[in-house]
Image (cartoon, rainbow, N blue to C red; front, side, top):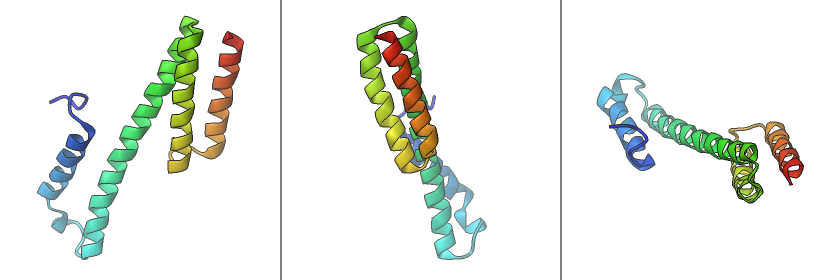
Length: 113
């Protein structure tokens, strides 16, 4: 099954199932450490999915600007900036990197209009 065909929750359950199949008991001995392994794996996958969504939104905006479509660029700009802000809040992007990316997007949008 292709990863893109399945829903995010299915991907997470498959990945966590593979960890429990390997036997978390083999890794740490302490109960809380076993739980941390599971939680870390789930959070890593969630961050990976969010990062992929962020990149997709950014690519959509870049494509709209390259095409010269002002209306589409404005719509995708809003979505991309929202994703960037959420990534900064989650800690996936440094706040200065997020601000720099939003500034670059704004400059491109203003030059287009």
